[in-house]
Length: 102
Image (cartoon, rainbow, N blue to C red; front, side, top):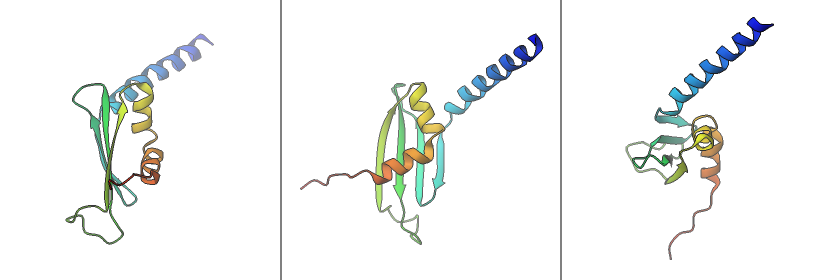
């Protein structure tokens, strides 16, 4: 029983180390028609999270249809949102209504 407990504790420690390494990485990938870029902001308090939408068949050499940036608080919850729940965050940003000036 003690050996099982030790193994479980060791696994938890390894998961924590891997999680910390993953959270420091930058994102630069496609999620469906969305180009997603994310990295720790220079102030050390926020995570820059940018989503660009390209229409189907649109060249990436042209500007995106829309481009939205949000800043997420750089804490355990914010890192989990950005690095583990990326798809949900992208979908939320895509559905946000942005008021136009004028």
